[in-house]
Image (cartoon, rainbow, N blue to C red; front, side, top):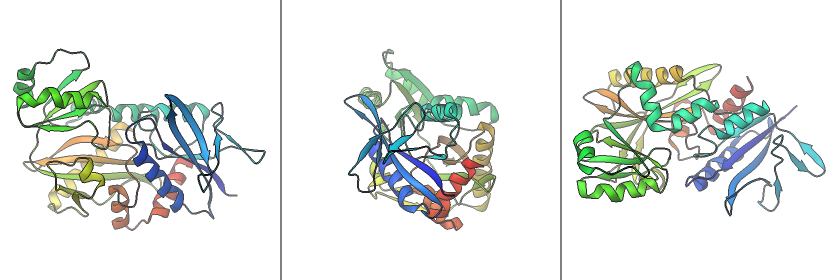
Length: 329
């Protein structure tokens, strides 16, 4: 019997539209002979969370019953065997939806709620991994309302530096700062996305992305991607508007490949992750420094993790189908 699969997409953050693209690619790619697929669009309507099922032509929107995560379709109540989580940002990447589905005992494709909350908070993630010897850039923390001391920031992390929204993705709320006088504006941009700010030292080196997924009952490290941005860094334009080269496999030495692959596998295991992940690193003096871990990475045809899966030999149907089978396992 075919399984009913809910593909959740959208969300409440700036990444809403990117998530819609990811979710639609999942919907189009899944094998319909194996799964009954239902698109569930989550969004805020005048600051009120709205969850609806959208039919194939976007003509009909049916409200989701949040008490049991079901829909009433043609007089028949539809329950879901599994949820494919394609939401970047809140509430799909920060643990909120994961906790909800865990309470309802509905399998879902991403990591569990604690791991999602931890990895979505860049500051907490890097702090949690530091005792395990995971290297990261020198950093400075700032919260909304804190007194701003530009000189203290420069003394701590140097210039240039990166100012980031602590809990945001797709390079929203991130700036590269070359002069102390530019710090207040960069912090203001970051605070538009989150009330926590992470300021990090600039690492000059090769940037790589390492996908790790659950596959056939165990973690699988995918071929590594080298990121070469045409812009000053891997910003929104570089990620989504073609202003970068994403080279898979990465042009790094075998020693570097082995080192960063083992490190990504170690992080996946230490944190108890499952589902799809993509970890970002920069090599400095031959050593990989962790930038962040994404637990609902982009899933469009142009996204990095699907590119890596293709090099490994997994097409989109096999990649997405494996996520569902792992969740059901």
